[in-house]
Image 1 (tube, rainbow, N blue to C red):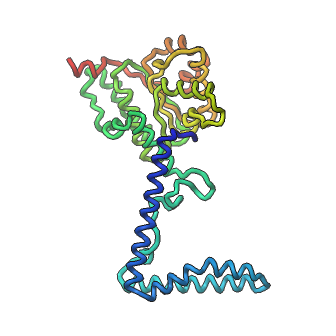
Image 2: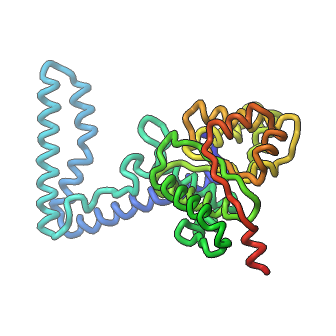
Image 3: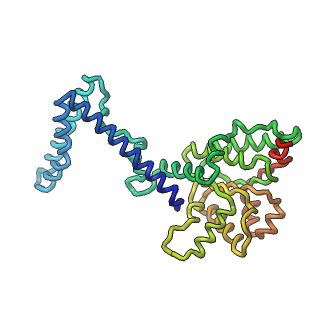
Length: 320
């Protein structure tokens, strides 16, 4: 997945810092314990030589190699048990001097032994992406719980309650490949608030989420097509591989001869990869058809579940 280089560097630096912190804490605890118990210090010294011992045994070879390795393993286990007993006598847990990483899968490196990016780092990049996108402050203060139906006229509330309940359940049951959605309605009807609330829950449940406007997404696809350095990382790749893409304000992007094809490629590729997309737009279905043509319209209105937002702009009403 291609991530913004600035976001990636910030997250990478944070991982490096917390890994060093965990290792420093473990080292300080080890020094503390060694000062209290010379016997544990000696055991740790012997344990630290286990790797070199096994290398020497393997280098010597011979028919009794398996036996020697097993003897070394048993000796190592006996030393660990003795250390644990000594720690217990000091009132300390058995893993007191071990390194306690925040993520036990990647040891706070962000990557698994297979070199695949760890899910914890994907989540961190998603959160950093929200913060950098300008939506970060909304993620922190907008949620399903503070979406007020009282702001709507009485006749509008049943529809908005349906949308609220639907998206809350959708977020709490989200899974990879969940059905994509299109949120249709005028400005100021809560589409961004509910989309943000959806993203917040999905991120907390461990999925990778990317939010951006149609304008920025089209710009990145256009940049990739005409970039001067072919070896440069693709800006658009991040939109294709995340578990959930929130494409906001469809219809506000600059219209060129390539715009419809960029958006169709994005929507179609994500469908083929089993990825979920939530699109929000102020356009009517007829306006979408007129602007983007049959191919994109058939994907959005034939494959996506439609949520309608009707009413008066609540932001305008609040200023009256």
